[in-house]
Length: 257
Image (tube, rainbow, N blue to C red; front, side):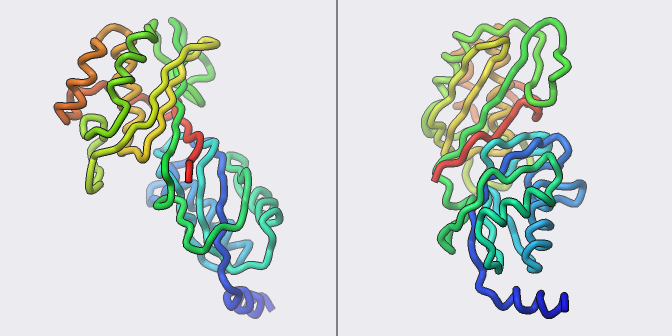
């Protein structure tokens, strides 16, 4: 009987769904499937296959690193099913681990692809500052003991807005064809004991946001002048930029199409 049901479902035409996903990145090795640990993508694909009795691939808009969170990750997945979106969402949330929740499910055009169709992505990085490490860091915000001056950080951030070659802000091990990206906005604000850095771009290089944040921290603590960030950008040398900020402070907020 189970085999017959599986055959019937495989005969059904596949439907493309657009999922908006929220997850706590701490237990996972990142979005993308990897051999060295459990990924968010693997969790979603495993549950989709259980619901629809068919192999599937969840294409994510952004390949978040281990420990990075998401409030608005988007994935596209094609599955053979007659279930409406609301029932798929309910079924997914009932089977997924508690650190992953599907915020919404809706039908999408069959050629919709969450990654290649994305126009821009926005990430937020939260920093807790103060002489004593907070017990909440490094869960959803990173901690720095240094007193940060936000004004020069904003000045330096402004130099990174626009289309540039961001090779200086890319981690090693990437195989991208070009390191040019357009940063649409890079905002630095302080409030409620937190420094918030929000970056929007048409795409991001590997660990690009975390390296930018690490560099802005150096500016905020007076180790770098704002103008030096422009020079680092022009030199295209990763060794000149600041350290890579911890993963726990970073959240993928939204994806635009």
